[in-house]
Length: 265
Image (cartoon, rainbow, N blue to C red; front, side, top):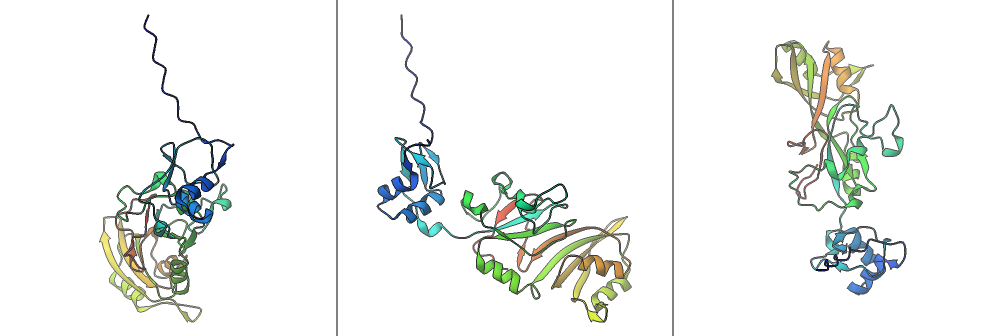
């Protein structure tokens, strides 16, 4: 009788016993515990062939390997660009979710990372932590929403909000007469105070609607709706295409990408 071969032993999973992964990495790399944590959070460490990004994970006799190309220089704060669908709150965070509020932040998942993202950034779990939402957008609108870990980006988008140009495509019912465009471009006021100036042009037309391109600085939720109401236009949809010099650039609705190294708002 031929005896069956013994199956190869299964790789041992992470355990609740043993020592912290960060301690083993510190020993392997002959570095400080904090540097070891950074190697792990940077996605450079694997346990039994699987990348582990949690420094507090415990290992015993598993095989721990640090990528020979590991570098602490790659650990930088990131900025994520989301194409928000209508119905999501741009600035709401996951803890605020309820039956009435759907935070756009909950769409920032690995599964929704745009496959054609050309940034070259390696996706890591810690990229989804400590994100600040920037530049508000109407819940009913779609388009570009910015989330960042980078304090410099946050400061830029906050302090320069009044001078940062945004571009939006607004679909309205029916045709838009030339005199309506003239009124919008001439500037409107509210309670005697001038509203932010806008540059409005026709983007495209159909038999039932017109798409207008709005370019304006100092935009805030409700402003475009108010401007359109003042000139008798009925909005059917709003989509933000650009914030400063950063545009959607083909990003599909409901997906996100990284801000490229050379992109600036």
